[in-house]
Image 1 (cartoon, rainbow, N blue to C red):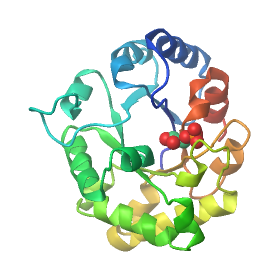
Image 2: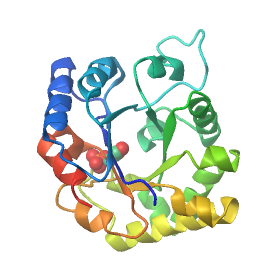
Image 3: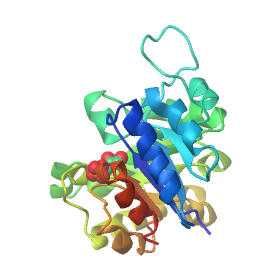
Length: 249
Ligand code: 13P
C-alpha cells in the first residue's frame, strides 16, 4: 500500500523563534496520524526544526536545493549540506521556483538525480497555470513536466519519488481544485507513470495534492482514490490546522 504523506511547505515565513514554536506545537499535538508528516522550514531554521523533531516520527524537508554537489555557487545550498542537517526530503520544482527563479524541467531533472544520489527523497511538483487549464492543455503540461524531469530515471530510482500535483491557480488563492478535478489529474498522472514504468510502480507512488488545501477540505480530497495526502502551504503555518489536516484520512 502506498504511503500517506502530509508535508508542510512553510515557504519564506517565520523567524527562528516562530519556526521552533511551530515545530514544537506540531510535535506536541500530533497523534497517531496514518500519514508521514514532513516539515519544510526555510533553510536557516532546518537545524533547529530537526532538533525539535528528532525524538518524534516527524521528518524534515527542504524547499529547494542546488543541482551541483558543491563549489563556487554563492548563496546556494547543496544536498550534502541538507543531509548533514538531518533532512530526508527536498521539494523540487515548486511552481514558485519555476516562475520566479526560472527553473526548467531540465534543471529539475538534475536536482532529482543529485537528491537520489544522496538518498534524499524528492517531492517533485507539477501543475498547470490557469490559462493552460482554460486552453485545455493542462494534461499535456503536467505530462511534459513529469516526462522531462523524471523519465530519465530507471524504475528503481523512479519508485523513490513523491509527486505533488499543485495547480498554480489554486496556490495561495483560496481556490481549491474540485475533488473531480484533483482525482482526474491524479489518475492521469498515475496512468502516465504506468505507461512508462508499469502498473506496480504507478500504484506505489504517492501523489500529493497542493493548492489551498486546508482543514475544511482535506478530508474530501484525501478520500479520493488517487490522492495520497497533501503539500500544504498557508495552512501548515498554524499548528491546529496542520494537525487537523494530518488527521484527515
Ligand atoms: P497554499 O496551501 O498556501 O495554497 O500553498 C500550496 C503550496 O504551494 C504548497 O507547496
